[in-house]
Image (cartoon, rainbow, N blue to C red; front, top):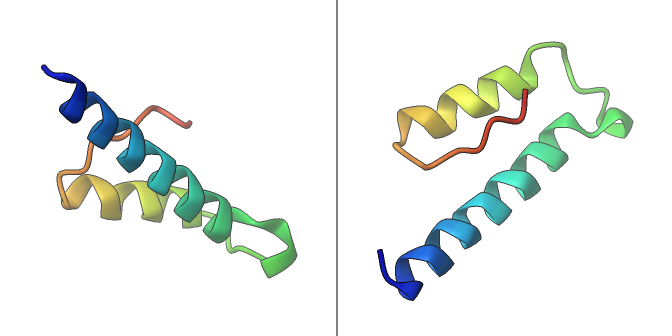
Length: 53
C-alpha cells in the first residue's frame, strides 16, 4: 500500500464521518436506525468503513 492509497482511504473515512454526522445530527430529529442505514448504504457501495458502533 503506497501513500496515495493511504490518503485516499483517510479521505473516504473523513467523508463517511461527515455524512454520518449530518444524518445523525440530533437537531435534524434523526430517526432511530438512521446511522445503521448510512453504514449499510456505505457497505453496499464497497466503501472502507471504520467501526462506529
